[in-house]
Length: 98
Image 1 (cartoon, rainbow, N blue to C red):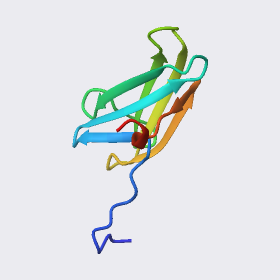
Image 2 (tube, rainbow, N blue to C red; image 1 turned 135 degrees about the vertical axis):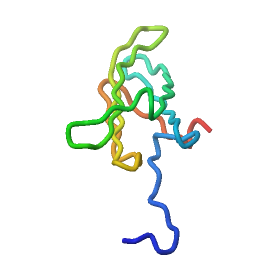
Image 3 (cartoon, rainbow, N blue to C red; image 1 turned 30 degrees about the vertical axis):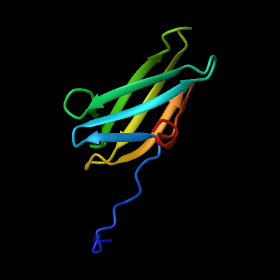
Image 4 (tube, rainbow, N blue to C red; image 1 turned 180 degrees about the vertical axis):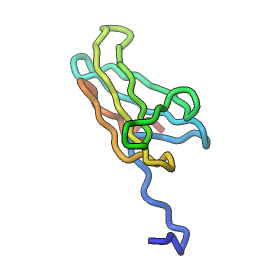
């Protein structure tokens, strides 16, 4: 409730925060299983949604087969990841790419 014991909420398994301003996510395209990585920042890439929360939306085009898709990462007002959605892509857990 008030975070009295310093416990952080669990981090999203698909989004890695590199520093206070920068995030990374990797997706795999469904048609040919190509991996595509995105690096995005609060100031340049994350926008505000209609309800006051934050949103990163990006079209995905794989480099080799030109598979197309879209990824969406949603944040609360404190920039904590609340949801990851994708169209024609699957998110790769951070534990698999570290």
